[in-house]
Length: 261
View 1 (cartoon, rainbow, N blue to C red):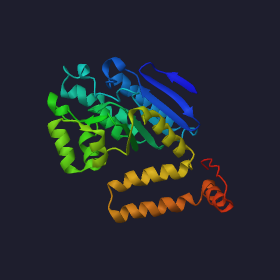
View 2: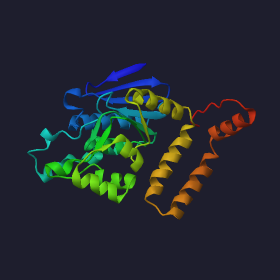
View 3: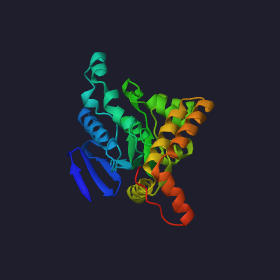
């Protein structure tokens, strides 16, 4: 198992094709300081172009995912300072990461932590996990996609309630609302997320990329436009060696070997 550490963000590669990023600020519940956001940005930019990486697991560890932005870095600043931080540029490599991303969430995913989790394609939550957009309680609002991704995930009524009250919802409620992919025992979150990542990493990576791209693009398109994207992407995959290998392996009743070609 290879492991690299930026102190605040630890990366390892627990399985072939799988990279794991772990937030490491336990003393402040993994608050997302500008430094941490920059580290996440750099790592995702690096991993997004790594042909050896087929799936990424993002976690805060066994106790907490991330308790939100670092308020101490925001309390005394003005609007121009906030605009000039251009946090959207820091989060762009996460948003546009071509590989599937799995968030393994234990404990709090509040504010920026909830928004970070929503950047993932799959969210595996522990039974004690809680999701919240509490920004209104300190006089601001979600600023990293919390109003936009949340409404797309859970619908207008639930998103309004969460953003306007700042009240957290449980993992079970998040699953019922469609925010979370699966809820498991807290002790199983990390292992289960890695099992899912390993499963995805063994799939043909070109197909995985196209599935992710078309689902995300289709969410904001009409049904007809989305179906057209789907047809084109599916047709393109018939030019890949992995498609030939996958179908031949199925016919021959053997395990396929996908190489991303």
